[in-house]
Every structure is written in C-alpha cells, then in structure tokens.
Amino acid sequence: MSTKLAGTSSDVSKEKLVQDFRAVVTDTEELLRVTAGIAGEKVSAVRGRIQENLEVAKERLNAVEDAVVAKTREAAKVTDEYVHENPWTSVGIGAAVGVIVGMLISRGR
Image (tube, rainbow, N blue to C red; front, top):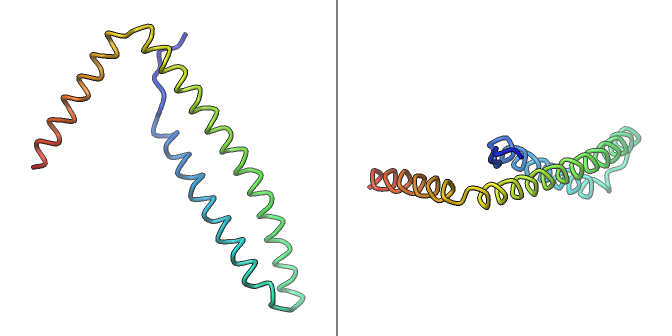
C-alpha cells in the first residue's frame, strides 16, 4: 500500500485545463450558432471542419475529465486509508499545517 498523499498541483492544473477547454468549446459552439446565417462555400467548408474538430475535442475532453475524476477518487481513497492506518501522524500533520497557516495569517495583519 502506498502512503503517497494525493492532490498534487498537476491534478489541480489538469482540472483547470479541463475547465478552460470546456469554456473554449462553449464559445466555439456559440460562434457556430451566431455565424449559421452566413452564406458562402468557403464559410460552409470551414464551419464543417470546425464542427468535426469540435466533436473530436468534446470526446477527448470527456475522456480527460473522466480520468481526472477517477484519479481524484483514487487519491481520496488512498488518503482515507492512510489516515485510518496512521491516525496520530495525520493529527500531527494537520496540527502542523494549522500552526503554519496561523503564523502566515498573523504575519499578514
């Protein structure tokens, strides 16, 4: 059993990336809706390519999002197991973090 605690910054950055990418997808869909009335062969071809690429991007986004959710669940499970196996160590770590945060907050005043 690994005692590595999860919740790394890469997990957070992946979640932020997923959120940002979802915003781009939403904006692109809106752009396609707004430009739906514009006629022309070139515009239609570009719209078709954009729609195809958008569908591929949405599929990949869903896959990445599922992977992030799975990693988050696994991290929570590992953390829960660690805390149950090492309760006093966990209490000590929590207390130390609390003291450090308290010191940082008091410095900011």
